[in-house]
Image (cartoon, rainbow, N blue to C red; front, side, top):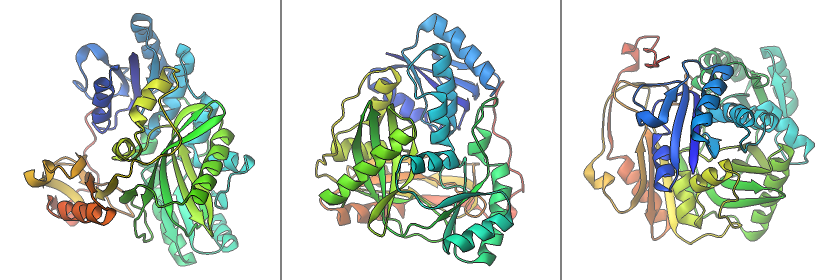
Length: 429
């Protein structure tokens, strides 16, 4: 199976480990970046279009497809969703379609579609300026959530408790959105929908991270992981457990709302990462993305239910129904945490061999490198990586995760010593 992975602007080397998984699972992967580093992938299967404009990316993909005859195109990046939809359509390959991709990328369009489809969502409104944000928050009632319509990884997502706090957070979010990497990695020449700030009502219950599949009229919940973070007024997707603690009735309700939302977004054949939060006993949609979840959620899925989001992505890209069943846990106890530090520029990260080689660690990925600038809320939401562990019980697994995370040594340059503008990433045309 020949597959083409796409990014309009390469997101460092973040997705390389998943690219290697595709090849381990029997695929032959070609990589096309609009802008990207040299020597990123084997030279005979790597090209850089020299531009992040969609016309140039499509032209490069079309020329390559004529030579190789790809079976499908894919991305693991939230910023690549529209690019993949456009390229798939241009090449006549399977895809979700540009309109479904736009709805699934833009949080405002997503909310509107979910509402039309009858899926429970928080109350929401696009706030074009601070007065409209204040008026909306007063109408919805505090606390409210403030978030960019085209964000990712919880960048500039704030829980806001008072009007004064909203004034501060709104200004921070507007300033941060201008340079947000997830926005700057989008392809030019495509309409992603409104880029602004949403004000949403706050959902007060627990949250689930779901790896799912839409195939024709059926939606499968392949994996469900409970998010167990104790939240403040900013959001880090930092601690998870599996199997889920949902009972049978709650599971049925979650399946119902995810199905309604997926179909409302126009998703009929797609891998999906769904986030659901309960509010007063009712599951509400936070989002459905048309890609697998990040971090170690693919490992969680394989171990906790036997569902593989990476294999599913490969199959769907080629128009083949993946191996999937409705949620059925294996009974294995898993825990995971993001590795989070304070702000600063990284000098060194040291992972002890006792951690890296432990048979209790099933996923360890350090995404930050020496020289990287770590921004923390309200300036950004960078993390160091992910650590996931197993145990005879969940309590044992999470204790191990926190114990091992504490053994990873991170040395940072103090924030006050940092330049105001970090060096640009090395990208080639």
